[in-house]
Image (cartoon, rainbow, N blue to C red):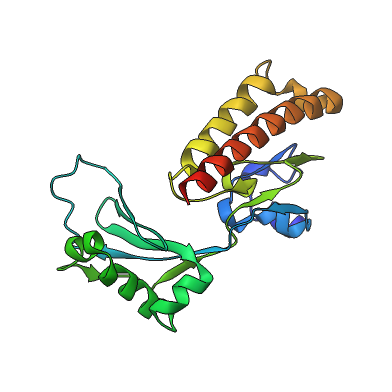
Length: 218
C-alpha cells in the first residue's frame, strides 16, 4: 500500500521487486494471504521465560542444556545476559502441572531434577511465553513477488533449535539457486519461479527429515 511504502524510505516511493518474508513464526505473508498449511500430528505446547542466575557451570560456553522428561523435555539456553528456561509437552500432559502458564512452567521446572537444580537461585525477569502450533508447514514457499524464508515457511519442533540454521540455509539456497547470476533474474518471472521451486523442494525435504527425527525422539 502507499502507506507502507511511505514508511519504508529505502524503497524511494517504488513498489519492491521482491518481498522476502523473514518474520519467523509470525508468518506474516502466510497469514495475510491465508495460505494453506500442512500440520503435523503432534499437539505440543512450549512454556518458557527468561531468567537470571541459572547455574550453567560445567557446560561449554554457549551450550544448550536439554533435559528429557517423562511427558516431554525441557531446556536451559544461555543468552547474552540471561537464560531461557522452558519445557515442551502435549497439552493434556501440561494440564497436570497447573491451570495457568506460570504455574505450569514453574511446576515443570520443579518436577525435573536437572532444571530444579540449575534454577534453584534463578530470578524470572520476563512473563511466561507460550508457543503452540508446532509442526506447521506452509504449502507454498513462494508466489508472485514474494518468498518465505525460515520459520515463516515452516516449523517442525524446537528440539534441536533448528530455526536459525534453517533460515540461513534457505537464504544460501536462494542465493545459489536463484540469484547466483545477479538481480536480473527478477525481470525473468519464469526463471525466478523455477529457481524458487528448486529451493522449495529442498526445504520440503529438510522439513520431512526433521519431522521423522522428531517423531523418533518422542
